Image (cartoon, rainbow, N blue to C red; front, side, top):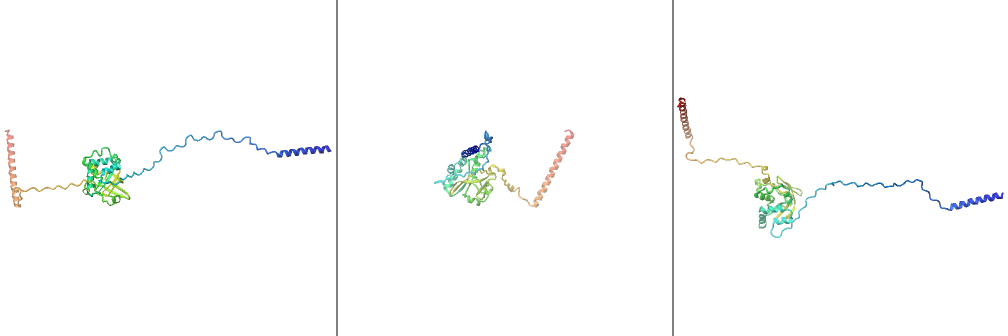
Length: 292
């Protein structure tokens, strides 16, 4: 009995010791599951080339034409050609001003009188846009008229264009007689110029003083009188009148009674003449029949 009790106590002590020792150990880390999902061996392949941009990007709206640099007011004599040379881009117009003699005329009138002028100066690109040979095909007179067609014999500021009456007179000819008409209209701050062949808009100011204003134009102003004379309405020719013949003694007017006598005498003369012709024909016929 005593041995059994001792044996039971020994077993109980061993059990308690085992429990004490196992409770003091740290808990084991949880084991990973046998088969965890594996990461893909290779990450997804990125596209070789990123999407290409369109070959031609959207066209940006065209830039407004650059305003010309304004030439400062000249000190001393006013010279149109020197002003345009300083402004650059008007070499063809300058050459024509000199070759036609218009530049010399402008110089004399601007510096020796109080006359003022407004000039529409076409750019070099304006001349290059013309059909090849357009200027060279003109006579010297036509070249002079073409240059004068770009000149108004008065100073017109931007705010005064709306006061002009069409057709506007130029230095090229007498507009009152229908020669070289130029029409100018305004719409807000825009000034439109029409020659009947060319429509353009007034550009910026190249030069301005009390006697002279020069504006830029991007087209050459071609007048109808030179480049399309058939398009102009031809004026009706005056009705021809017969001049009265000079009277002489033989041609002096006669009275009605005298006229009757003249008519009677003429009738008698014609009758006698007819009888003579008839006799002559009969004689010729007689000789022909006889074989003479």
